[in-house]
Image 1 (cartoon, rainbow, N blue to C red):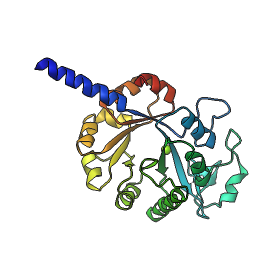
Image 2 (cartoon, rainbow, N blue to C red):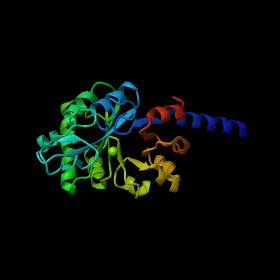
Image 3 (spheres, rainbow, N blue to C red):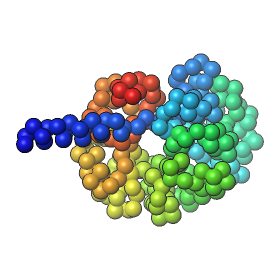
Length: 253
Ligand code: MG
């Protein structure tokens, strides 16, 4: 009986390991001199070509309500939220691309089944953050990508996650900040957590507690083999990394 238990546990662990997914952080961009631009169309294309489960990217809203893909709230010092899209064309990404609009990103996103992990960046106010979410939804609908199998949402804005939970309850929706336990997040209707791996080192039981509530669990941004092994052992569903090929090796994929 004890042996049977060990076998079952082994199978469960094995299944869990196989189920873990790779999410390329801001696309796959640390791989090639020609690509070395995070959040570029080239980085998304390479994530798609390498067959990773998902590719993460960040969005902001310009003053003239164009959604652009960029991590920081400024582009070469130009504040995105108070500038017009045209103003952002004064500079290019290191690989020569202009700052991608969400439309351009989705055009590329349509070309494979790679999950689009859309990070809604916190804007100057809650209302402008929600406005950004609404603009994203319009764009996704336009590109026929408003589909839970094609896109999921992540955000440091708890309000944005709450809004998404209410309005798009069928979509993956993970809170990023790491300052709330799974029960608190779940009570707001949000169906996932995506926390820095150091949060899980402090609270390793949050993974199983989230799973017990039916929530999805993602860990960011895990770049060392040791940390990859750690979060793999915890059984998180998705691991976000700047080094997806290293992770692939760690996961034995
Ligand atoms: Mg991000």
